[in-house]
Image (cartoon, rainbow, N blue to C red; front, top):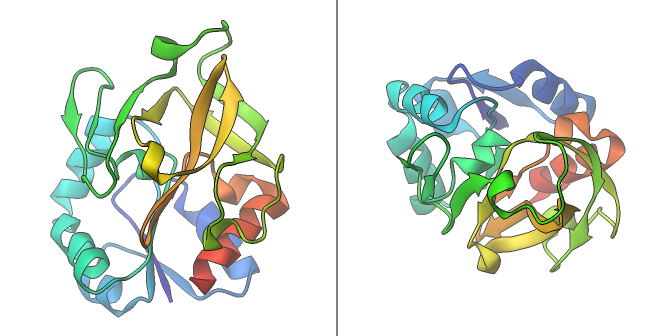
Length: 204
């Protein structure tokens, strides 16, 4: 069973449908007992970092998630803003703390952009794989995935599994720290490649 954390942020039903399409049992939940009974956890997210963190905090699930992941070694996948929340902090409209499950920070793409391109970074982009990992076992170099974001993770080289080039910089696309994973793009919107990543996560 995969628990999709419901804290009022994210494209939950599309993600649930993708998992169900793969034959993977899943539940959209904000219930502590259901999260603790699950085998794996997905933290989705769209919107603003500070609002999302506040909503997650309001659910009183942060300690539950950390306990399940850090102490009980339950795999966690953050998606889009859900991935950004895994880092130490974000500089989206101020400075805001994150979950500090992966070292690094979230900054505006425009801050580092070397070639002027549209913000948000939206649409299909190919992946450049930096290191092997079970999450990417069904993914090939230059496979395309779907992004929608204006901020990206930086100073997290130790955890980067794959990047995508945009605006002359390497956008952090996939990260991993032990059993904690993140994708900046949306697997549920990334066709067969995205489905293969979700399938790989279910097998970790």
